[in-house]
Amino acid sequence: MKRIYITTMLTCLAMLAAFLGLFRLMNITGGKEHLTVGFIYDNDESTPYTYNFSMASDALIKKYGDRVDIRTCSNVLDDEMEEPLRELAEGGCEIIFFNGYSGLVRELAPEYPDIQFCQTSYMDMSDQTVPENYHTFKGEAYQGRYVSGIAAGMKIREMIGEGIITPDQARIGFVAAFPTSEVISGYTAFLLGARSIVPSTVMHVRYTHTWSSYPQEKSAAKQLIDDGCVIISQHTDTIGPAIACEEASETGVVYFVGYNQSMSEVAPGTSLVTSRICWDPYILAAVDAVMRNRDIESNMTGHIHGTDVSAGFEYGWVAIEDLNPHIAAAGTEKAMNNAVDMFRRGNTDSVFKGNFIGVDPDDPTDTIDLRNGYVENEHTSYPLFHYILTDIITIDDTDS
Image 1 (cartoon, helix red, strand yellow):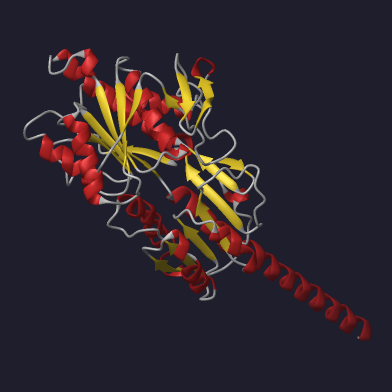
Image 2 (tube, rainbow, N blue to C red; image 1 turned 90 degrees about the vertical axis):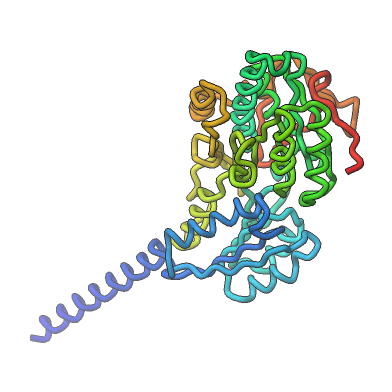
């Protein structure tokens, strides 16, 4: 009997150990039942950039329901980042997302090693030392810019064919915030997409020197239209340029190509198409990683550069939306789809390529010959192409 008793006890202990081991394994791999997620926005949802970014928050709620508690701080300037960051970090958030460009995030992350900090990339991180809990990410926006440029080129070709403009009047206007590589890369890809359809297309750029100013952006767009630009696009953060196009269309011919958010509601007669970065794939995967106690980058589908991640059409990080069938030229959708398929196949080396010379606006001795091509986002999610293509891009002085 004693031997049976001992055997039974040993069996029970073994079963208990197995159960505890299984429970521990389930806790590690199954992860958390609930997660508090923070978002810090540089603006609010009334602006296209933040509105587009905030859509990922909606995607989290749709996927997880009450398993996630989302806390948001809006209209946070870069140099005012510390207080809201600490508020969220010390208020129970286990992962925090930022769409601003403050370096304070990277500086403060080591103080909260159990919290993951995920920020839209604002510089080349490939040679930077970053904390283990600090991550950067961005969709490869040049792909969407190039494809939306094809839609612009198709419209320009139609206008030339109908005698509305001549080939030497194929002029695009671009309202830009600052001469950063992110902005320059975007408008260059947009122009080269248009030139793939109409090789005579040129671009005029006006800088506002602010990310978000409705009157300045609208004024800059109006000046570009007055200068003869028949397509307007932007890398700024208000609806000002779209409104300028809609108003100008009452007396002339001009069309608008959007970024981040469709302008079809505010500019129904001129809004041609929109390209945007899709933040959902990264944010959903990052939250899933924290939920399951996994490394964030190992849970990603994209181009991994250490703790920095980027991707384009092939993984759904970039999208083309709201092509306006009432004003788009015939064949536009097919032409854009062909380009999207090219990107999905991994053919990304033909965008920044051609018989062009580019010059660094801050250093005229720094030039690039695009006959050899340039691959964007090869080692970092932050766009690095920063050259102004001579002869086809003009930077206009602005007093707006």
